[in-house]
Length: 234
Ligand SMILES: [Zn+2]
Ligand SMILES: [Zn+2]
Image 1: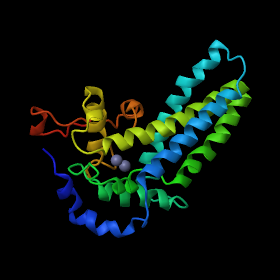
Image 2: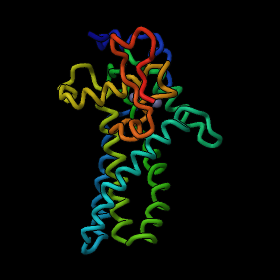
Image 3: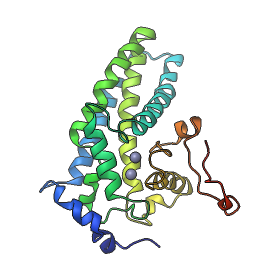
């Protein structure tokens, strides 16, 4: 059994970080706007397609996989290491998100805690702008439809990431996390919030495809392996 909402709310490191909250922060607003923008972007991208060919549909799983690799790479890189020009990513992630939520205090106590979970609104553009040259490359290499399907998938992936990450930090025993598969994904992310592991393991927040591909998926040590090894897959 984890900490209660009031115990979470009184954790000294959370209290200390609370003065950084903007005065009128609304988690609902910061969740609603990306949802509206993403659905609009998906609908707009599809409205620009014409007569999509069977092979072009392959762009959907292809772009999803590319997005998964980018998620892993960005999380392993600038979100956990200071990189010139991208310090804000490190500060918002390693110094804020990871400082506020530890592996034994993953749940938000109040909606305002999602300030340290959700993307700021400008973050949407930070995702969308790098997606444009990749879409242009898909247009050049494949077709206009492929480029539009790439942008639609990028918008979907972004909002999928927001939903999943929000779910992992919901109050404990929330009905959404009762399904076995969701518990598996939540545990994957909780292990990443362990300070000993966060620089090395479990960088995927959605599906851990790249983590398994690149050997950075961490499994909790079994009783047999506790005698020596650290239980990591690498
Ligand atoms: Zn998290
Ligand atoms: Zn992280």
